[in-house]
Amino acid sequence: MGATQVSLGPVQNILMMTLELEKLILPRHLTCCLCQFKNKIDSVCKVVKLHCECTSSTHCEEEESISTTKREFMKVLQTRKKNTSTELTIEPEEASA
Image (cartoon, rainbow, N blue to C red):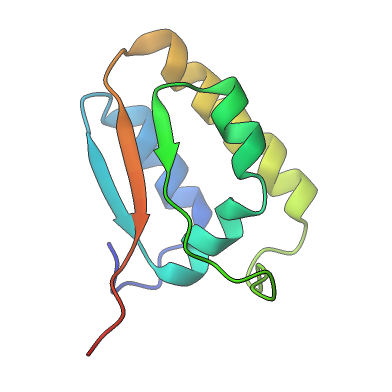
């Protein structure tokens, strides 16, 4: 999904429907948006590892409310945690050469 313009909504659906998924490569801007609350993700959901390579100046441009996004995403992760033991790694797409 790295080269797509996918938003967080479809990613949440993927996380809920593909419980055996082990690696998800997202567009860099979306991964950096999630990195804003990486510590919360790590503390709540041990089965999801978010690999961040974002600079501190990176911000989530496409989401209107990061707190609402965070709350909704955390609900998805908590549900996933209850339903699988498969570890999922979320990584940003590689920079194009």
